[in-house]
Length: 580
Image: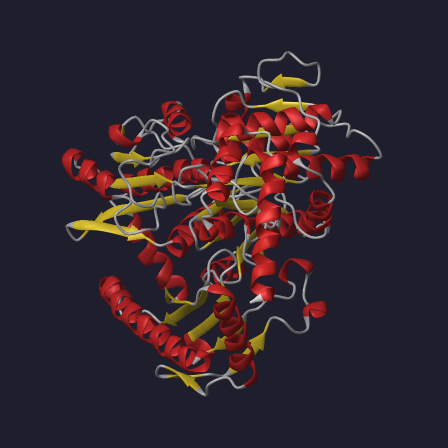
């Protein structure tokens, strides 16, 4: 009892100290109320941990305390970033830090605090005065040779969340060791109300603070337009939704500059609204998220539906097929975009393509046939971007395209991160060009399967909450690696690779990670890994089968997908038994 009582006493003392150091009266008051009412469970939720800073920055539920997203956490985090930059450059860096934010209710204030802390640390800041798509901020960081960039966004997380994403001086998201160095710098920062900060940073007129030049969007347009292999003179009828996010205005403006004038947005979801009133979960991968876009598509007779997630760095799409809307998977979109770029490559230099290790091997096959250099990376666009830059520096060629199966795509060198805006434009181009030949995106996909064989992908997740769940997940990876099954579903396991081992023999962008791959010969592979953001162990299945007849390729694909789902279920069952 004494130990438990001491721990709770320490927690209350931490909460009281946090209140004393919180410059925001609202969150300080919320935590004070929890202390006054002895709401120990809520205090534990708020103060029982610290949001950890990593390669994805920080992200969490908005609320009071060290374990939540709030002004105090943002201020301390930003001071850590500032101290890291000042130490790296032995003083203020030569280039500015770019700061942008999304439309969540807390994002503007968090961004203004970020700007104020950086400027008070003697660092020049260029900020977006209104919400902006994440790809536009990343583009600005590249073309302005920024020392770093910060985007306040929780992307497609639930409405209660917010986040803080950091880009390095190469305009790609930070990777080790920068993330570790920033995390250590944050730990050394004292109470938030003692951190120097320029108040009302957006309006103060401080000499180190200025808004971004409004022509940044036009510069972005010029850059993405230069990546288009062809510019069709026609279009298909398009229904579009930004899912209450910040991409709508930019996407509509981009399409206005092209032949894609048959473009119709979902009115109820077009204006940015961080409460996301018409969707339960603002992620286009989630069931139901694109329902309103499909309803609009039905009403106007659309041929293509496009959707961005709330910060517009991802793209989802659906096409009319066999009388219904058929969602294209991230892997299918990846090979459609990637093959189009490879097939129309005209630059002087070998094209470089890349995808994450959990994405389909199909793009690698297409790249090999095209004589391109193909890279496989750890999960996350920070790795794709850094792998591409390393490959270019080694003289391998010119980066052309990269993707990950979770609807992230990067076209050319415009943005060193995923970009759902330029991907939307290029997919519309492909659809229009196919239409000129009385074909559809589904016909284009069938033609690609004819080259490589049909590839299908499926996933299965096993959820295990809490510290005990985390241990079960890691133990399951251990067991799977030490005693892999002889078969999964109806397929023999021909090889096992434990990606925690032998990292020194692989490139830096495919280093050690808790990932086990089971190869199924020519039939494909199965992977298992812990999620980086959720209490899940995720199973990925990629199966391949030769095309029997091109006329029935889509029916064959559907049958193969059923097999892939069975394979995922089979391995998930094996892992569940390992967790028991």
